[in-house]
Length: 424
Ligand code: PGA
Ligand code: ZN
Image (tube, rainbow, N blue to C red; front, top):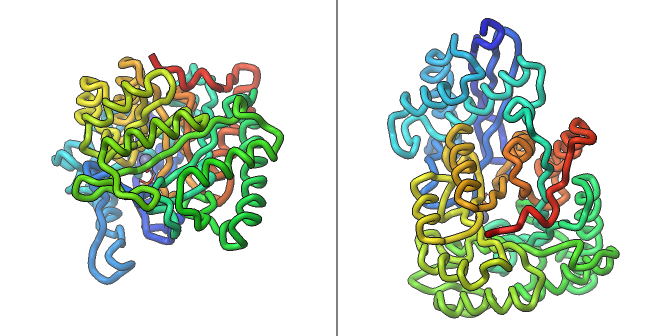
């Protein structure tokens, strides 16, 4: 225990990929060190745990000095001496210190930075990579869901759907999957430039292109052409979307492709897309409180398309349980900063698997160079990860970590492929 005992914890304010401040924490044990930083969303769910911001003029109110102070003055003294391997006790202690339902007192950003830094310090003390420390049996490398066209709140174009992803399910390894993704991305770049002019290859928050095209169908057509151009078929590479529908919902209507749609119209629109294109996954097809229409589309597309809940579940056990009871989806999007500790995230992921759900580990649109989500996806064996395009350093950091993990696992490594999308 002596080597694993926490000696000190410290936080500082750093910048994220959008240039906004975020929290980075460091934990020191007697035998190791861990550093972790916290991401931040743009199309955030209403029910996410609270990201504490300073307000005032500094950084337009987005400073996180309060959150850092909470780590340095309240959390750190309480954790010194604790065993860094006892993730549940450390996270439990912080939840107790916070005392609120949504971590609004200390801030989910403060708490998560320490939760992650402590886990990394424990792994370092044990001289294990994080994924091995979290699960000695780790072996499954996830299918990367590469977001190659950006819309919604992540781009300055008029596409309502936020993310158009490719899933290289036919690859034999993560390394090959990323090569496929990169080749498709490069082919798409050329196609978009030819079709829509040079400004079409500007990129959005997650590294995907943000072309000035109005309708989702045009985005799918361009991507399918890119897949063919790169020498792949639609058996090798499938399509996926994240609508982030709360971001284009107002007063009972959804604004999509220049039309105002009722929930019923939107359902028909999705079914049409699923009939027309090789789509295997749809995330947040309806706004975050519409469990009923989530259930409707889940039953309509059952067995064909995975329905993923992000803003509706916010990695929160209570909201997710309700979803399971109602048959609202077939997949859980796992974002650790939506709930604020590693322990609670792992708990929801395990419950999802037990309930017959698939799990997709996810980055946020505002990220840092930290790549713990890659280790988490492998440790949980989720078989799916989304962390943006094969471009921009903060996205690539996660994909490159998967390449390293695959190499470390050697012959034990197994690429999830199409099996990752099997739903009951
Ligand atoms: P966000 O987007 O990080 O801006 O919330 C990602 C997503 O909606 O999945
Ligand atoms: Zn989402």
